[in-house]
Length: 174
Image (cartoon, rainbow, N blue to C red; front, top):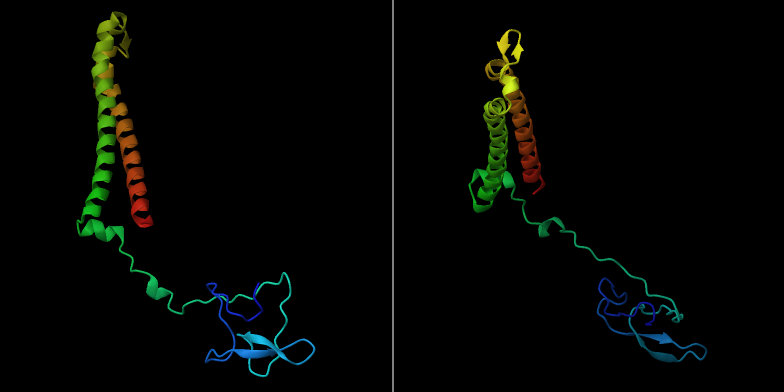
């Protein structure tokens, strides 16, 4: 433990005392003699005796130029606009997710449309069922398949917009 005002070399501590850094003498306890040289007391001021278990007072030192240390922000939208390597990675990731979604929707619709004739071939009883006087295979392929297309298109647009929102959030976070 060092006496109060004595420089300890700890970061953030500033010694107090004469500006030229010369040591000052502190008077002894009873006799008025000097006990040694101590940094941190002003000339003519009485120094405190160090107390056991008492920590030295710390002073936080900060720079007034905190903004000077920050580097300018380079937005990801600028990376995309200037077609840099990072911008290309961002765009490739968006295009890849949109392409994957398109393939999924097209595959599902192709399976449904391609599976209907197979279903009618494997289950011959369905070929003989009539719906409002029209055979079921004709009614399904000529009219009832279009709501499935509309539903698939609606789900595709909804998911594509969600992908674009996620991409925009990713770009804004950077």
